[in-house]
Length: 102
Figure 1 (cartoon, rainbow, N blue to C red):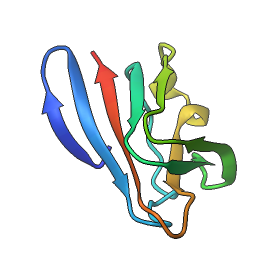
Figure 2 (tube, rainbow, N blue to C red; figure 1 turned 90 degrees about the horizontal axis):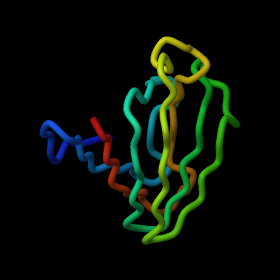
Figure 3 (cartoon, helix red, strand yellow; figure 1 turned 135 degrees about the vertical axis):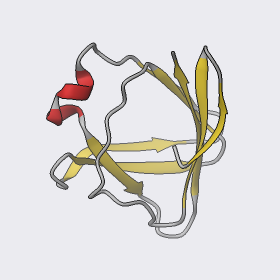
Figure 4 (cartoon, rainbow, N blue to C red; figure 1 turned 90 degrees about the vertical axis):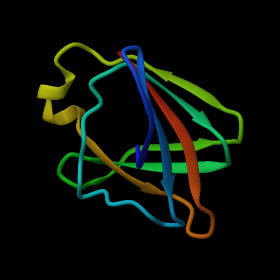
């Protein structure tokens, strides 16, 4: 996420916002907790591999879409599970809420 909104013993809630064409795919990260994306606007997130190559994923979503992701144990140690991302739309920002379950 880009801004932490809430953290307690149950979860972390992030406001994930990218300017049009924004994001830095050269800064990969790992997800270590199961999480859900709640899209609050139309968006397209392009995924890049841990070494900066495009094409890992192309996630297109509409306002109100909700997506669940389960993270395998040990994923944080697997470089192939790391990824970077950027907004796939050059003319509109991307915003979603990311809720990580502890």
